[in-house]
Length: 83
Image 1 (tube, rainbow, N blue to C red):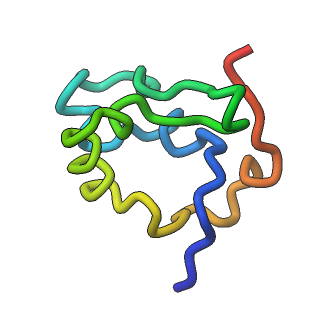
Image 2: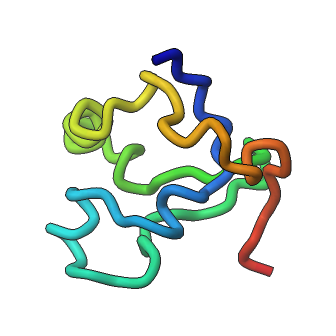
């Protein structure tokens, strides 16, 4: 299977918490670590930006390996969905 690069649309984190988020926050409808970055023009994860801890989380989540939901329509409409 060929994976497409992550575009930061937010779909994954808004619909299905990762295991790191579950450990940290318990089950929630949406991961509280997800935030929209106007500068980057995409969603980012606060935990992945936390130095050494972020490195471990990026490895756990296979960050940079590609999107596992390539047919997701949000990929073509990356925007802030919090407003």
